[in-house]
Image 1: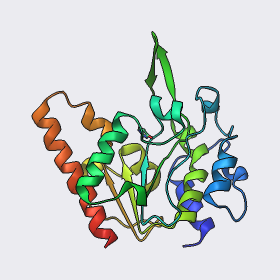
Image 2: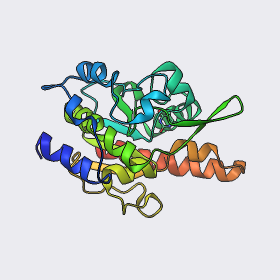
Image 3: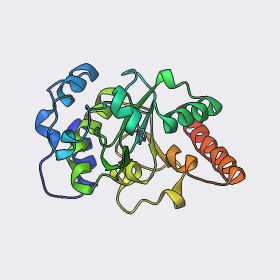
Image 4: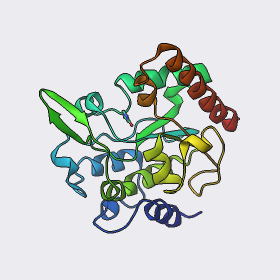
Length: 222
Ligand code: URA
């Protein structure tokens, strides 16, 4: 599939209407030129709330590309994806699944932290369809540059943005599915959802399932 077709496929699945970041994508992009261009993105209003754009991280030669929803509080402060509690759980699970994070590309569907104040805390809010659509050209361009063997969607926001709005993680998690994005794609739960499980035994069981899903991605990598 061509670059343009891939981008259009990604944009189509997210909804309609409104401005997107498409016009900001540099021609013949590299990860560095994309990162620099994304730093000034104003395609949706989330830039006003976030400290900075949190662009993806990793090598352009990564075989696996992992996509989350949006940066959280810690990511917003540091400018790096998946460095907070969910990122630490992801690191442990990747290691258990035999995927070296330093050889993976890690990014998000939306590149700014969406939050609302509650006392002194900044509470995560789900990005809406318009914000996702506005931001998707960045992710499509990252995928075009990295050309990963396997795309892993972490959670429903990433899975529905990339694999279609009718995709259900609960039904299809851990299965290789057809996608124009990469030779192989797979979705699993978001690591933050595991952290939210109050019961320790249930949390441990869910972590095992998460590791099993990531192991399927590792096997798909070959
Ligand atoms: N959750 C995400 O989806 N992405 C991050 O980078 C951190 C938390």
